[in-house]
Image (tube, rainbow, N blue to C red; front, side, top):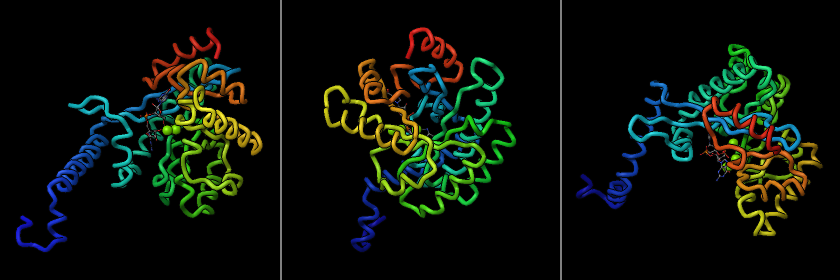
Length: 282
Ligand code: C2E
Ligand code: MG
Ligand code: MG
Ligand code: MG
């Protein structure tokens, strides 16, 4: 179709670009349908305290595709962000996680668990985000003190005053904030000081080679010290071995998440993991 057109048009109709655009459009349509048809679900990955055992879980989005099976969020969350679907999808995630929180609240053994929910920068910036959280908490009856929102440093590329205001409104309700993938993005220490955060989450890229790479060990130690000096909690993600956990403990990080304790799994799998951790110790 590009025959006889100018150079720019020819480039536009590059078949590879065209294929990518088609695939992307199909993925977007698939995501919209998934939301309508109830193909999304949440898995939960335990968060462990060295002293208190399992203290909560992170909700991780899964797409149960009718033909492809479980699709990774790494594949579709960026697309959901780019096409704006992350806003209604994010609302669904928040509600589902709060309903799970209410479920845990019914059992004395799990009533103290917190749920951590990933919130994309685009979703957090949406004008109605704060109202939406308030509405979800209200309509589900979830305890705001047990809700933790995971934000990433990419949020700080925007109007930081506005971000701080939004965080403040939610924090006034008791909602907590964790800064996800910490150390991998853009973060100025002066912002860090001003954000009403509760926790830093050490990115798994620093945990992976903790034992073999002295730089990673130094970074982990520095993040823990930074968290402590700012009076914040700290949790490490991607903990896969007892040796990583022990090294993290030796630099003062006492909260962990990773395959060592449990992979993301349906909520029904959590009580067994909690029991194992209670028995074996963190
Ligand atoms: P994240 O929030 O940093 O989540 C941690 C990722 O590390 C998860 O991947 C988790 O399954 C994986 N992981 C956990 N423990 C280990 C470990 O010991 N070793 C290794 N190698 N990996 C581990 P997942 O579930 O594929 O999610 C990927 C990313 O997708 C998340 O990174 C988050 O940025 C995004 N995401 C997931 N769920 C949601 C959601 O509900 N909303 C939004 N906006 N983003 C989400
Ligand atoms: Mg996260
Ligand atoms: Mg992370
Ligand atoms: Mg990550």
